[in-house]
Length: 250
Image (cartoon, rainbow, N blue to C red; front, top):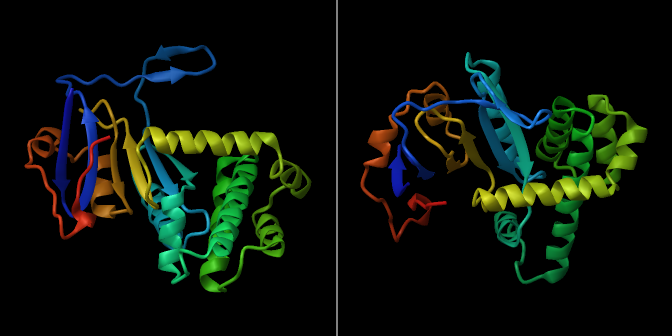
C-alpha cells in the first residue's frame, strides 16, 4: 500500500492506493450481489454546498465536460454539511461567525436545501440535478433568498411531480439519504466545497480527490493521460505560508 502527499499541477491531490501492473476493472451487480465482467465507468463525485454559487459554476464545468467527452463517466453531486463549511460560508459572505442566530439560520436553510435536493433526486438523477442548479441559478442571477416560493418555482420549471416532491422533501427517506451522503463525505475525507473525487482510474485502486474543478486535470485523469507512477514519486509538497497548496492523505 502506497500513501504519499503529492503535487499535481496547481491542485491538491489525495491518494491512498495499491499500484497494479495489470489493473482489472469489473462491475458489481447490486441485484445479483456479484462481480460481472466489463469496464466500470469512471465515477465522479462532486461534493457541493447546495446553495453555493461557486459550486454552481463547478457543476456546470463538470456537466459540460461530460457532455463533450468521449469517456464513459458516471457523475453524482453530493451535498455536504459540516461546521467548517458553515464557517467558511459565513466568512465568504462577510457574516459575523460569532452570531449564533445567523449560524443556525444558515444551517437550517442548508439542511432543508439538501433534503429538497434529495427529494428531487427520487424522481431521477437528471431532474434532481436540474432542480439543484435551477435553485442555484436563481441565487446567482437574481440574488434570491432560499424560500418556499423559490423552491416551488424551481420544482415546476424542471418538471417535478409537485405532489410527490412535497411529500418526499419531508420524508424519513430523504433524511436517511442525507445521512448516507455525509458518511460518504466522511469516508472520502471530504470537508471542503466543492471537492471532486474520481474513482476507477486505471492503475489506481482508490480515487483521486482535489478541491474545486480544474478542467485540464479532470480531462487528463478521465482520458487516462495520467502517469500514476510519476505522480506517486513526486516530492512531498507542503507550504506553511500557503495552506491552499498543502496535500493530505486519506
